[in-house]
Image (cartoon, rainbow, N blue to C red; front, side):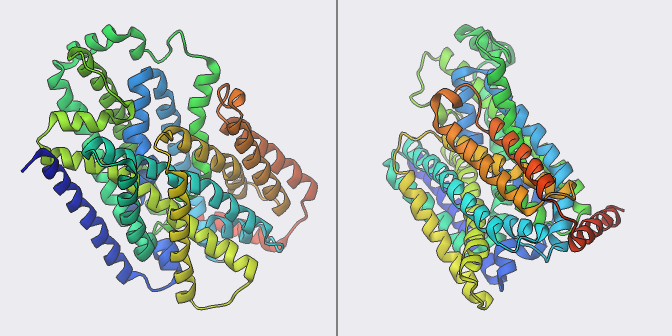
Length: 495
């Protein structure tokens, strides 16, 4: 059996496992809440790892190692910002959102939560939120498909578009049928695979490059600045932009929806510990993989064609072909876990927040589940068209979508959980101006190269939401009672 056949066998086993989980989840999905939120039944480990796997995507195994391979540890500021942001998200958002979404008419999507929380009789918040989710997630899903196409091209020599279609077909199949449970269970398994692969590759790589001392010497031979968090080329704006990735967590629908699905508030503390531990070790692994790759190519006088494939290439060099295939499956795990999470949230937004709101249609859950599945298919097709260009950058696509969500939803979510006086007009104005600022800033090269678009977008949203809310605030007894009840329930469940 050839090396390629061993690796392909591992990939096939992995994909069959994903489809089997999808079928299992399909059997457990009986209504719309099951399909969109898993019946609020997730345990802390599944919640933590599925949130992490949904978060990191192909960026963790391809985008970040590629950036560090080229530019060195200065790119690790993104990882630092993300870790701080993720911790604060678990600490500040997870417990309150779990309680508040249940208090506000058992909301199952972020737009429906905001609609119910703010008593928006116009439905404009719900529709605007759904449209923002649809626009930015289509870009986000396309970044995963780009990663899938690059994966099969660099791993097996398959044509880019063939790889893109294979990955898309499998992930769409299990998401379409199994819904949120399939996405969460597969993400949990994929998170484990990613974690083990990211720890194993740099550790084994160190043996090949002669241990820690020889590895560091080889990296310095390429450039001493590669090991410097603050090289001479670093700028304050660049570091702020990297750290600002952490701001995005508060507004990522595919991540914070996990907080709504966990079985109880008490479980969020354990989930936070598991999630942050997984994240820190995985990020260290991604950084270590890139640096070991630099040392390896320096020692062997080689050249890497595409820096974003350093994890793939090292896995093939270091391990038996079948084990290398499992390492390659980690790439697919990262890519597919994020695509599936984004597809299910986009489907939720289209059905729950646009279709229902615009058409005011009354139907049974079977109808809505069917519409949700069709939404998954349509969004996947549009994202596939956007991803058809093989020269698309994974990191730039992810960065653009991440900024859009962070700027549109982050400040509004935080204000809705901690500030009684947020109004529907304040939230709507903030979301629209935040999303527009991030979108326009990100499309102007002179601006986006100077400062990451999430920074102006986030603070524009925050300021506008607060100012407009203060101008339009009117006491509402129902909102006040719900806010108080959520705080009481939060204290009770934490005991």
